[in-house]
Length: 463
Ligand code: FAD
Ligand code: NAI
Image (tube, rainbow, N blue to C red; front, side, top):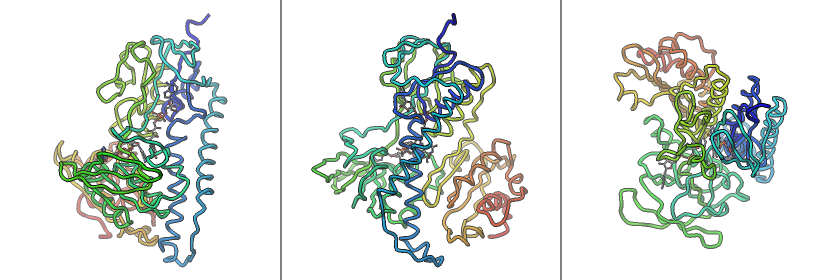
């Protein structure tokens, strides 16, 4: 009889966990995955990346029709919002994609253990009270919304991203607490559909972690679109009466309080790792001061045979980072060499225009040494200009001595697609000259990356 029920037991079927489970099974390991949700795919497929992109895509069409962008190209329409249908296509996308993971589990013979898992010891996990043993356990339990002290999320008037995806009607005034990725994406959805949107951000600028020029330019663009920003401001309380909320705001550095009214408040001040109820201590584990599980370069925790990946470990909370860690951890468990280059993880905000970056910001790069920076405006890119998408730029940051590319940042309608070539170039150790001398198809938005790379040496053609 085998010593363990499974070679690998993954806890959590988000992009980290389901990818780890499928890869482990592909590598010939007997694999199970415990997931407490009704459907597979985790935050990303159920209440994150996928439904938010479904709402962003549909609302972008509505906005283009409503704000005159289509009329400018000779397509005159007066849009009428059918919110039920919009929500319907969101639900369809989620259903199809989560169902797809269930199909892949069956195809690869990954056993889905339905229920909440908690450790009995490092190799024994109980799922819905039933004990399961495994030689290797991968913790991929993801993250949930960080609550704001004193503010109760009822998912009706005060919502998290989950409630904000499903609002049954367009709010008159939505206040978004936090000018990060969720606030800007979901704030954009409801702004496009007719809501007045106010974004309250604690820091002096939106989008922390992004390049300074990008943060400033993004702020300008969103302001022009109609989002009102209250920077350097904190929310100290939200009182709900019926279907209305009164928020108390104060300058972040202290000062007089004021109140504003809203009929929807989105709390999007970050996410925190899910470890409650896992009984980590029984496996000999604890969390760090940020609630994360510490791992080494190979995704091993300090408990023998227990590994961890995705949002529950340090690093950016992104689906593609979790997926790559899922692949790598399974390969490491199978005795192969699974590696994730954490220096080259792209970030994309799926607003209009999109905002994307990979590698170091100019500020971080300058702290490490001398850099050269090339910038190219989308206004001078023929495709963006033809498509009436003049906003944004590409910025390439290279090491002053070696010319090696250290970071690339873009604001452009298709920045999320463009950033892949920058990530690949950096993964191959490219110099700005390598990018500048790579033939890019014309007319494409990506030519702006080539020209920004040419600008590193001061020689772009079109500006
Ligand atoms: P998760 O996807 O959170 O999955 C963890 C799973 O584990 C969950 O299904 C949970 O039910 C399950 N679980 C937890 N504890 C237990 C337990 N004890 N037993 C059994 N099951 C358990 N990232 C991007 O890269 N691109 C985007 O466009 C993007 N958009 C987003 C939009 C929103 C609104 C949100 C909220 C997030 C978005 N993200 C996006 C972030 C992305 O969703 C996460 O980074 C990603 O889902 C993390 O994957 P994971 O596998 O670590 O965890
Ligand atoms: P975030 O970390 O992106 O932004 C939170 C913002 O809230 C920050 O700007 C922060 O300064 C601000 N803040 C914190 N406390 C505050 C307070 N008390 N008052 C006012 N502002 C406050 O977090 P967000 O937007 O909640 O997203 C969570 C995670 O989900 C992110 O880490 C992101 O990686 C992931 N995500 C990724 C997406 C993508 O890749 N397109 C889309 C949505 C989410």
